[in-house]
Image (tube, one colour):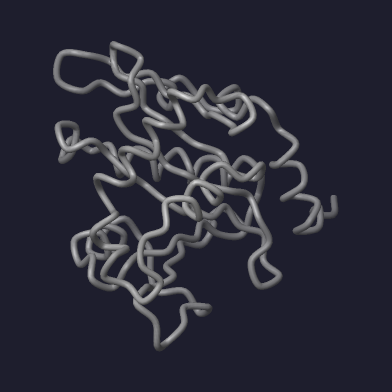
Length: 195
């Protein structure tokens, strides 16, 4: 049987409204200390203002300083536009009080002619860091890459963020062929091992 074309795979992924229904039980919750966080996938059009504000607050806490050190600087309005674009998806971990403990902003897209799942952001509240959440979120994204038969999982990371680069390398990412030479960030990717 012939494989669907890359654009068709991306279109199919973007048309899916309930991504968590495609995930096994192990990806629907995550135990942290004495609680179990629920995993959900949110789309901008169905998110509450409170959820949007929680995402922006966590992003600002974790990254505003790093952005300010780059040539483009920090622009909250621009970042909100990117975060809540209709194509954006947000994989979130909800703590017991239904607050967002961590999230990944991602999209299904064509990147240089290749069908990808693109991780724009991954952020974890400080009190939940170093508990395996980053690895878990990336495993869920990788699972979605497999589900839709996409070619690779791609992300961007600031060159100054040595810890993140080390983490991504440890879980199987390498510098992507599309990564530009003279910029403050790297593009890293992990190929779909099942293709």
